[in-house]
Image (cartoon, rainbow, N blue to C red):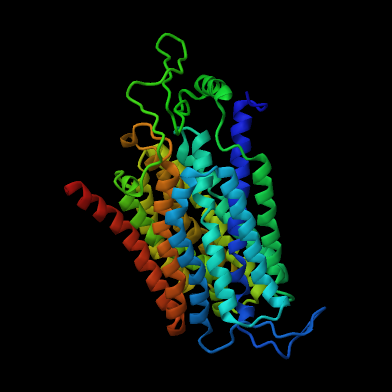
Length: 467
């Protein structure tokens, strides 16, 4: 049996996976903070402790488009790699898979920052680092969702995963703050420090992660859960292959007749055939397009429009992620209470469109308005994104049509997030191409994407059910 009481042990796993994916996002954020420094021709700027140093990577007039390409080196590699990552995640030990992924990500994140100290001004070098980092970062999401899925039941799934998914915003906030400390003095450290952090969590993962409870502790966990959480639905494990019989007051762990324990992982096409996977994948494509455009371009937008310094703009952009934390938790609570995950997503997406228009129109008038609008926009934009990538993915990965196949969750999660990552790649690229024509056009693009996210989910659902 586990040395921890079951609830404590599940909480420990939840905390570990929270820290792991916080580190993943923490290491992605610095590039958005240092963009305002990377394009400056600093050959005549004397920095404290550095002396005369040309820290620029790109300072051509079309630097915004070039930064869009640099972002997409990461995001396209991430999108492509994600479709394969889930397949590997179903077949490899998750502890090793996550550990290697975080150590590799720490290496490539640090190499990007070392370009500052090695005085590298080749865009190709940084593009290569971004591609490699994008590939190794795909190890994170399918693996941590599968780990959480192994330990938590269906009751209150939206709320639990809404709270847990705040790691995305927490990582963005910490990444912004850490990068902001060094951005004006030596931007290389804005990458090296996060690289060290994610590598350290990789070591932590190797020694402490237990990806699934062993057989000796299963009965104890099931008994504890049934006695304490029966009314809330937590009694039904997320990846359950056993029946709980309480008709005569006894608890049975005998296999159900209707449930089969599949030894083979689900195929890619098999995962696509699960009802809901295609429509939510397409919905996430547009929702993630909006979210990642803010992730990569919000600090530069604030710097250009509100005329903040790089550090101040980075600090201000964290309010969007604070709103994202509240939005993810609220979306989970509402969807648990109403039972309508799709409806919750659609309402938040529709509400986000006019709020984005208002933020671009009046969001920079004064500090109070800026703070309020960033919090509201962050909640409405990241709430549906968080709900789809966590609770919805877990629902679909344990769909009744799988008949107890406990090895589908990672693949389903990878398909949904991989499709979403295509939008994540398109958003920053389009922002880089459109922003020279004016920030208003960028926001029109984001508003259109929000509306399409809602429409495509309902249109695709109607089309598929008519077949």
